[in-house]
Length: 77
Figure 1 (cartoon, helix red, strand yellow):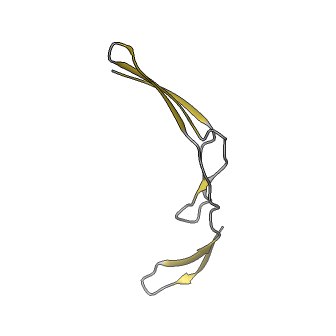
Figure 2 (cartoon, helix red, strand yellow):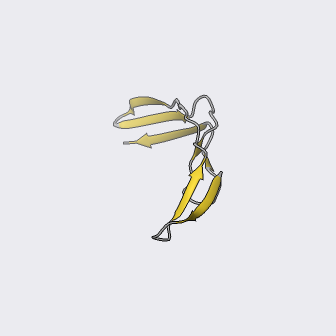
């Protein structure tokens, strides 16, 4: 929630807003090294417990809902 109270002398807005609640995330990475010569494979899960959390906005817009549980795979050599 964002409230405009007024303008200060440098024309910058003064705002009061509710705090964004704190949160804890658990991310995991599984790494397999040298599966094939010099090839690594990574599998990861971000936000393992699918926590709903927000990042604060910097303007009049609503806070930013962050992604829930996501998976990824990467291959490197």
